[in-house]
Image (cartoon, rainbow, N blue to C red; front, side):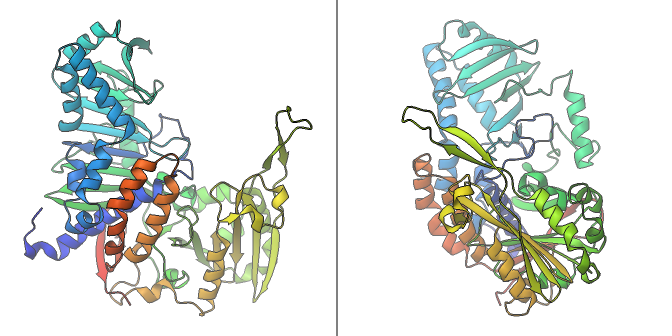
Length: 543
C-alpha cells in the first residue's frame, strides 16, 4: 500500500506502534505455556473479539503498514491464513460437499465467512491457545443453506444432524478429527467449535450483549461480544486477563486493549475500570535496561489483598506496578516491581514469607516405576519444595522456591533437589523486599539484575528514555522484542508437531525480525480517567 509521504510523521508512527503492539500481544500469548483463566468457560467474556467487514481482508490490512509488511511479509500472513490444518480441512470438506452434490451452497458458505461482515469470539483453551471460536455471520440465504445441509446429512460421512439444547445443529467432522458446529436463526449463521457454547440467539442474546456492555462500559456501542465497527473496517479487542499470564490481580484496573483499523491506519485504545495514578520516573528507574516490553499499571489493593494476605505491605505501596519482559528469559516470566515505603516493615518479614509460601509452588508429582517390568508406573505426590529465606543486608530480605514445570527456566539436573522435582525443568521463583521496592519473578536471574539496578550497578529502563517522555505507561523496544519473539515462537512450535508452520516462519518471518529490531524504542502514555483512552505513541532515538 502506497502512503503519501507527508503522512509519515505522527499518524504513520501511531499506526506502526499500534500494529506492533497488536502483533506483540498475540506473539506473547501464543506459546500456550500458561492456561487462560477458566479455560473452557464460555459464559465469561471472550479472550479476543474481532468485528470486521471482511475476515479475508484482515491479514492484508495487518501488513498494509510498511514496517509491518517488512516484518510479516504478505506471503507469510496469507500462508498462515490459508494453510492452517483445520481451515484447510474445513474448506476441503465444503468443496467435496459442493462437488458431490452439484451445489454451490458450500462454496457460498465459505464466501460468507470470509468476505462478508462477521463477528468472531475466541476463547483460550487449557493450553493457552485461542482454539475455541464462535463466528457470527448475518447473511440472507442462511435458511436455504441449512435446508441443503439437512438434506444431505443423512447420507454423508462427514456431516451429521444433531439436536443440541433443543436446536437443530449440523456437525461437520474435519479430516483432522475436529468437530465444527453450524446453526442458524433467521438470517444469522453460527459457526462454532464447542457444543457447550451458548449462542447469541433471541432467547439468550440480550443477556450476552448486556454482559458485554457491562464489561466494556460502552452502553449501546456494542454489537454482540465487542465494540461496534462504526467507521472502522476492523475492531479487535484482547482481554487483559488473557495477556497477564496469571498476574491479572495485580493489573485489574487494566481491562482490555482495542485495535481499530480506520482510514487505512491502526489505532490503539486501552480500557480501564479505574483511573490511573500518574507514572513516576522512579517507577522506571527500578527496572533493568534491556526489556522487550513493559507496562506500568495501577494495582487494585482490594483485589490484590484478597489473594495476597499482606495488608501492611500493600498499604505502603505507592500505587503502580511495573512489569517487564526480557529476552533471554521467558515470555511468561516477567519481573514485577512495586515501589513503596517499606522501610518501617523490616520486622514483619514473616508475613511476606507466609504469603510467598502459600501462593508460590505446588505439590510435585513423580511417576514411580513398578517393582516388576510388567507393572504400570504409579503417580506419587511429594510436598512442595521448601522456601529458602535470604538475608541480603541493607534491610533486604528474599525468598526463593524451586517449582517444577515443563517450561521452566532450568533443567532439573541444575537443582540440588532434582530427585524431588516432578518435571524435567523447573522455575526458581524469587521475591525480594527492599526498603523501597518489592521485586518478584519466576526467573531468579531477573531479580539479581534488578538488585544491581537498584544499587546503581546496572543501567535502568529510565536510561533508555529521552527527556520528552520519562513517564510512559508502555515501553516497546524492537531489538529486544524481536529476540524474545523469535525465542517464544520457536518454543511454541515443536519441530515434531508444527514442522510445516515452523519452516514457513523460519523462511518468511525470522529474516525480517532482524530488520524490525533496528527500529527506535517506542513509548506510550495514557491520560487519567476511566473507560477507553487512546494510546499516543512516541518514538525515541536509541541511547
